[in-house]
Image 1 (spheres, rainbow, N blue to C red):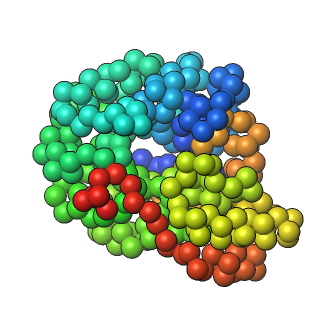
Image 2 (tube, rainbow, N blue to C red; image 1 turned 135 degrees about the vertical axis):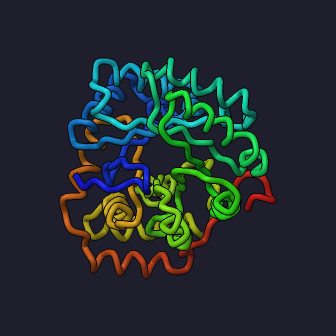
Length: 309
């Protein structure tokens, strides 16, 4: 496993990391015992960064993760969770709520401190509130020693440009913007590097776009994007290859991104994901897939409040 500096935080994170949303049965029902085995497998394979949220499974993911981490030495992992989003339509970025949220997460996770607390999906709130109220509140929590670092997460890249001009953060978490189909996160990298902000990339499979199974019914991508990605997956399959392998290899290969999150509740899957990194990228296959994806390359979709896109 490769380990990279997370901005100027002083932390070194595994290039592939574990997203614990699956522990909350976010996308399909997941067996708790299998989820716990998956966490242990991830740690044994060299993954040292774990990301979760109270939103995932309405606190279930944090609860299951806490059980999985029971008895695991605290220096074996770096733990990130989030505050501000608690349901599909439940958001509260007030100082009081995010401060309380940290304590609730600590209790569910069974730890004394978090390595990183992130304001979750800020595009659904007032960005000015996040600047003026949410982040200052979390910095005050940081002073107590309950959290080591403070970051932000979200989907539209415009939110990061807005925030970075007005606030100090240690990390950003962006999802579905550094994949085979969309690499627009790289447009932000020069600014992030100048400020030495750690970059966390999530959903290298585009929330299901770049999988053999295809997109779930709720996926917000335009129909053409889904269809073209399905053609790319079918082409890989015809070549005896899983497009997910190519997608994960592609994302992790970018050195300017500290870590890429993958989520699964299956220990065999996390083992497979890590083993894929040992194989070189098939450059010929990559070029052919990129050619197929060209008509929808960097095509995105809106998320959150219209003014935040």
